[in-house]
Structures are given as structure tokens and as C-alpha cells.
Image (cartoon, rainbow, N blue to C red; front, side, top):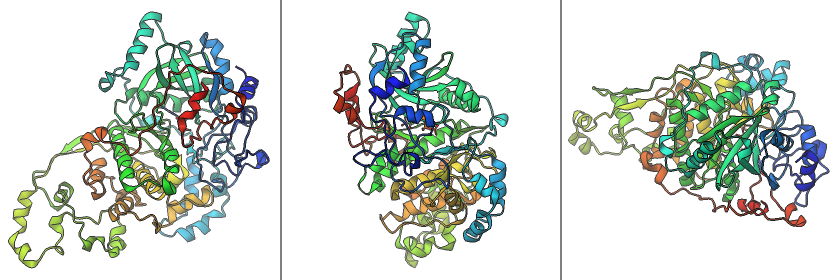
Length: 595
Ligand SMILES: Nc1ncnc2c1ncn2[C@@H]1O[C@H](COP(=O)(O)OP(=O)(O)OP(=O)(O)O)[C@@H](O)[C@H]1O
């Protein structure tokens, strides 16, 4: 299928929602005002993808608008006759092509922010915003192109030099009952190898910076996968081979319920293909947009962030700093549980998980181990979040330390030593890669940690910062430091204090957790020293059964998708109604009508 063929058969290649402004194509709008481009136009312009629906203003200070291509629905499933014959088809459908993630090199950015003081945001802004370097940097011009959908940024500086190599594992002990393994094994034993020709590409699910992802069926098996197809030539010319390799190696090493399963990987002359688990529920960004008020209830947010926390804990144990947490990268599985995706910006480093057991617990240990936190009115006072509590430490002390809630008589009745004896310290697993250091500029503007922006070098604490922004966005429907453009956002991150909107009303424990995570100084950030262990003990997570959360009922279970329905010819007018690949309207699965 050629580009022209795609243009003919996929009508109204819709710009993904939130693509404003689209100066070059403003005149092309659908009835609902959605700008439209043909796939050919998109391919010609080679603009990056985006998924932000709510952005009404450009997230860029300058640079071309961002578009993604088509509806993603393939009229006829692509059934490769052979790898070489398939290449042209995939290439012409690939909306990514030579797209760039917005990128930046570290030096100028850090120089610009070296003059900015986190404690004095307004002044810093004034001081630096006029500098030529800042304006050079703010658009992250690795390619001179920028995307508007909170794309991830990265520098070309390799993190890999100081990092350990990761052994790849081909067995996933926890996925033994998954029939897709067996389907792959059968084909392999029959044909010897597994390649592109064994798959039918049904639908484009989306495109990222280094490749496009297709819903695919392993021919005749009714086993469905998400296949990420990366053009090796394009990766090489854009110096992204290392990133693709990093992602592949990380995926190969994972075996966790909230992380992707990589079933197989193969190469053709032109393409590198990753065959992963397909998540039919879309991403959390899209799901959030569908919530009343565009934010999640606290219960739902708690569920999602708890699962993400477990995924991050596992990654940190493996010495992987994720660095690109955002709702767009959290996919929803068939059963409503989450899958953290997209590892091309991750940093690998050495880690030595350690079990820490204190024989003589001091007050710190008691505080950590005692789950009976004080949530008495005394601690819910607004004064509690004033200066003393702006520090990342939680306002919640164990009940043991709360004298206000007890009468003098009670206090006398329970002398301190007795209480100390009641609290036996549990061993704690500390799996935080605390020594990791990177100077790269990677992430997504609204999610970038201050230390990355300032170019001070960063470690695993950046994941706790992004975790705080993530929780904030799920609860409030927006990120805390978003400015009118990328540059303003970066300055807000560094210099503006954290503020909470008056509505929706969010519990004190949630806000306290966010405050702890969004400490600008990484050393004061919750999770800095003891990682997940520290965060899990926060009262916000009280009642979460960490070990069994994978069995808990998710807040939202996607409607079942009938993937094995044979393709049926779509009437011309019906095709025009097919939603865009990433648009995911109220009923995602209408799209599958068109297979
Ligand atoms: N396993 C999957 N199941 C369903 N959809 C997926 C899956 N993996 C990716 N996608 C979809 O494909 C899109 C592209 O994914 P990909 O990981 O290539 O890029 P991305 O998330 O946009 O990241 P980036 O540009 O930061 O690398 C995603 O936005 C997502 O909607």
C-alpha cells in the first residue's frame, strides 16, 4: 500500500485533538472544528505526534505545529507476503518518519538556568528570559522541529557509558499461562523463525518519536499484539539507534504485572520490530479526559498511582530510572490494570537493593514503621502545610508522636518506653539507585524535574518528582507548573511555588504527598533516600494492599473488543466517521468495525 493508496482509503487523516495552533492548516477543519490533514500532507511535513486534547494554546514558543497523521484504521489488514514486500507498506503508513522528539543538549540549558534561583522565581525569570541562550534552548532544537503534545525531550548525550549492561531474558515466569507465548512457539517450531510476514497489521495505534505502533495479529492464531515498528535508517540518521536499543533491552528484562511483556523482537532489512502486549484501554491521559471534570476521583487516582508506584519500584530495583512518567505513557490493560510503557528515555544504572533492619529503632524508624499516622484535626490545620511542612517530610507523624490528641492522663498511662516496645521495626527493602547520575536533558516539559532543567545532574529522584506531577494531574486535571509556553513552564517548575486549585477538593493526605514529592531540592524530596518504601508509607496510601493490588477491582474496565471479527467492507460514509488513532472517543472500539 503506497502513500497515495493510504490517502485514498483512509479518509480525513485527522490531526489529533489538541493540535492548535495549526497555522499552516488552519483552513482545514472538520464540522466539529477538528483540523484535518491528509496522510500525504502529514508525511510531507513530517511533524511529530501529540496527544494533548485540552491544550488550547501552543505549548511551544515557536516552531511548527504538531500533527499526527491518520485515523489509524487500515481498510485492509496488511498481510505481509514477505518482509521486503511489507516494508514499503509500513514505511508509507508510518506517521513518524523523520520526526524528532523535541530535544536539547544539556550545556546551554543548564547555563541558562545556572543564573536562575529556585527560591526566586520571578527574578530568575526576568534575569534569564531575555538571554539568547534561553531562547535558543527553550525550543529544544535538536532538529529545529517541536511537538506540542508534551512530547518527551532528550539530549544526545549518552547515558549508557556508565551503565551496566542488562542481560535479556526470554522467559517470563509470571506469564506462563499466556496463550500468546504458545502461539509464537508453535509458529517458530513450524517455520524456524518469526518475522514480519507472520503478522497482519490491523490498525495503527499511534506513533511516537522512534516508531509507530500497530495492532497486529499473529496470522491465523487470534493472538493480538502491539507491534512497534522502527525504521532503522531513520533511527540511524537521527542518532536514535541507542535509544531504540535501550528500549528493547529494557523491555527484554521486564517481568512485572504492570510493565509490558515483550513477546519477541525481530529485524528486517529496514525495520526493527518489537512485539508487545496490546492494551485495548488506551492511555490514562485519554481516560482522564473522559472523566467528569476531566479529573479522576481520589479513589481512582489512588489505584492508578499505586500501580505505577509498584512498576517504578520494580524498575528502580533493576537499576532503571524511568524518567518519562506522564498519563500518556500509562496504558490501560484489558482488565483495567495499568501498564507503564515507553522506555526509550530510561536510564540504566547500577543498583544494590539492600534489606535494612534496625535493631535499635530510633524515632525515625518508628515513624517509618508505624502505620498509625496521626490524622487528627491538629495535623489537618492549614498551618501544618506552612513553612515547616513545605519541607518534603510529611506532616503526618505516627500517632505515638501526636500529643495533642491525647489527654495528659492518657499520656501518663502510656510511658514512651512501653510504646517503643510495641513497635517492632520491620526490615525494609531499599532498592533506590541513589548513586545514579545523569546530565542528560530528558523528559516532558510539564513533568521535568527542577534539577534536570537546571542541568545540575539528576538521579532516581526525578521519578519521584514526575510521580508527584502525575498524581497532581490525575487529581486536578492539570499539571501544576504549566505556563503559556514551554519556556514559561520550565521557569515555573524551577521558580514558582506549588499551589493547589480550590477545586476539586482533594484530601489533605493527597496534597501532603504531592508536596513531599514536589520538593524542588531532590535531597528533600520524598523517596530520595528510601525510594518506594518511603512513599508507600505515606497516609495517602493507607489501606492499599500492595501485595494484592493486581487482584483489586480497577476503577474502569475497558469494554471488550472483538478482535477476531473478520474485516468487513466499510461504506464510504462510515469510513469518514472513524475516529483518529489516538482520539479514542467515548467508545474506543467502534473503530474495530472497520477492520
Ligand atoms: N502496548 C500497547 N498497546 C496499545 N497501544 C499502544 C501500546 N504501545 C503503544 N501504544 C500506542 O502507540 C502510541 C505510540 O507509542 P510509542 O511508545 O511508540 O510512543 P510514545 O508513547 O508516543 O512515546 P515517545 O514518543 O515518547 O517515544 C502510544 O501513544 C500508544 O497510544
